Length: 417
Image (cartoon, rainbow, N blue to C red; front, side, top):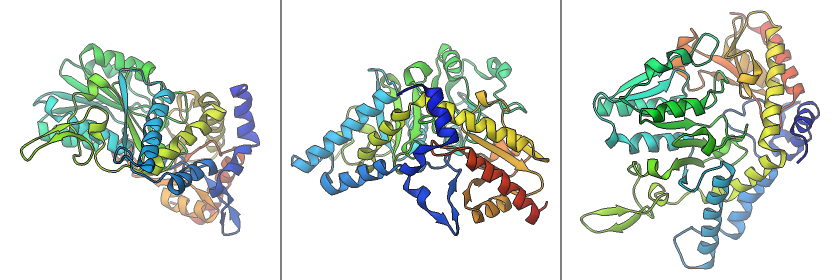
């Protein structure tokens, strides 16, 4: 493709990509749909929908479970997607891609699988900005193993308090699990340096990349993590498919979370042994049509490039921040510098409750997220029970943000707090 900056401006100001998303043809009453909830689930371009349907029409077999043609074709598609994802995410030869249901399942796989390596008094390090999916599994593990959870604090500006990092990390730390991009604050965290420090004390590192993969260039090799979790449905792909990318030596430490068909090597009436990685973590029949369609989503992203999409996100985020800050009594959550953020902005309108605001916006055809965004402890720390979040995809442009701002003013005419 050409210049990422030129492409980003084109997408932002006169977005030609919108026509490729069938959902954006919908009318919400007499209004067009304005979709600003990409951080929850991205819309899908027509070619991804077609790819899933084509698999079901033509190759609807079960991979690794037959010698007939349909099964062989399904196996080729299934393993081809695994190789495609590994190349896309820059996974080195000593790493493997495991298919899961979503990023949540991938994180749970690690948290439950590593239990035997966590003992009483061992430490698990998280941050205060974690999604529940990267918090609750570790709470359960700590309770089960009598381990200690330590938190890297978040500053008032929404960034990690890295000055406290040396006192949080210790020789007892066994794993550091943190988000790459906060789904509330938008903050982009310095994974490479954190991973380097964690490895220095012998700790593993898991990165929740649900809000970064598909939005910006992400290299598993460069991040230096041991595990990377992300979902297809936040990267223009199908729902019901996620990924755990892991270094082989780290994956070897995990016990399978689920057992059953195809994840075994040998079963007798007395015992069982596991298949080689990654198969040992993929029990039962997968969401095969989703696996088959995801390479098309990668092709779609690469058509524009992750660099161009990242610039597009930042241009929209900068504009959204500028427009929101012009409104009295709006509190922005997270850094005010768009260069420090991913493509989302959560805010609190002190005059209108987030649920009321989202209701009015929906009546105007604008889809946003209202609530705690599966981050209750973070909201509580900020003195809030909920916030409103607008998040952007490749199909978003400046007119969407203008509509959001107009919708806030209309909501204020109806509701006050």
